[in-house]
Length: 119
Length: 223
Image (cartoon, rainbow over all chains, first blue to last red):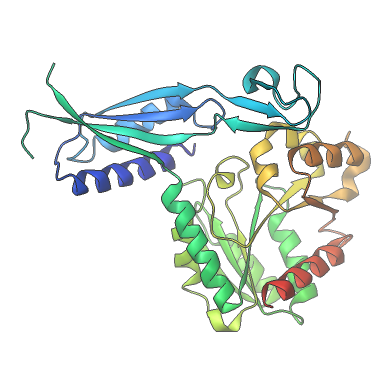
């Protein structure tokens, strides 16, 4: 349910970027979302449609999501492994002394603006 | 397809909130105010635990409470009636968590120079509040016995952001398959630094340990 809150954060940041770049219309927002970020892409999309269409700047704008794989590091054997398949336990040495390297991202990668509309 | 211009942003959506939270922590430090962000599932006994605890420490510390809920002022009223301390209700307007800006607005309604400890009772939820830094000096959570000893496995982020875990409702342990040692081990796996205190808000067991912990932390913060 925090997807709606995250959408409000995205809209705030996109609005700021639009002001800085003097644009009045955005056609797409591209997000990088880590596999274990706890953000559910389908929910984010639904919330986005609902909230973005209420803004002149973002009406009809598409939200594109790149999913980034989660990777953990084992402090015991020094190897990396995919987090989703193995969780907290290293598949090589069975140690629990592991931590997440990446996969927690909730980032706005870029904003696309239609060239035809001179802002 | 129309040609598009791409504006690169490459920025976490939490970045602004994280910066704002760090600013708020600095302001709290300058004012000598300790802000505890208390989180849990709905019904774990946050309000009852707070009432017990505040009645134990209100002669030692000047305490205020901010209650965050989606709606109603039931909790703020309950705290005020049962302890007599300053208690305000924040409404999140349907949102499932508080962020640093909302917390700052709430603090603006309290007499800053006249409090040592502010306890923020966050929205009952183990997912969203863990994502958003409120600017609190310390995160704590309550896990109640009926919820099960395996909760740290199911909500890892919440347990990894908390410095203190209170295990509440210990009086009903005989009726549930709750293994305290196993629960401690699961919490340790998520966060080796987390302190665990078993309490029972109803009988008062363990509340003195929590009260002492709070007093020590507040005194350290004010140094």
